[in-house]
Image (cartoon, rainbow, N blue to C red):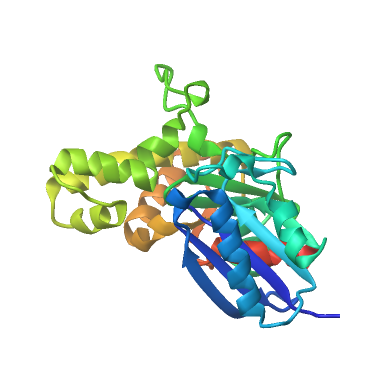
Length: 292
């Protein structure tokens, strides 16, 4: 029987695929663009073709598949902005190609599992993996297991209300905290304030010298740190590992979060950068496959 496992990470802008051994050692990997305008079916079809090419005739013992949203047998809730993604039967489509040993899950929760098993959260209980990127979400780890929640939505802090006067909420199709401090929202706010198109990554670079950019970053981190501190007060974690695309600016983000934790939390947890900074969700897909 093959000891290789296949991981597939369906992201908003790219699909990452990797082959690993049962111990989680990544042996080969590749990636392709999502092309969201083409719709959901073509994303899955192209990913499966890329997976076959990567396997080169080898049969995986198990497959782990992750996606933003809550992956259910017949649909994906809180789905990304790819037309038709919410209607996908993702496990069924992948199992038709590679057999029944397919495990599916939410990308951030799977990344938290990878950090717990092989990375920055090893030995920490309870613990939190905080993903800061285009979206904002957390994986809550208790007893070495990632908390799913009653509906699979534990840790979806991007939907947190920003205050008592916040009228835009999930019922209106909003994700208040994510829209305020996630990568896309930060880029939009910075572009408006600076009068030109700016991405979140560019914003953090500009903040070193530009007063307006620095103010936008400072306001966002002030708000984000309140929510992280409240999460730490609620859960009393041993450690928080921060990952996601925005961690390219770790030297700005992590000190701001540590300061708030130190001042606001009765028992401040250790705050560290995630171990898998570039491919956490793919490693999480491999972790899911290795658990099958």
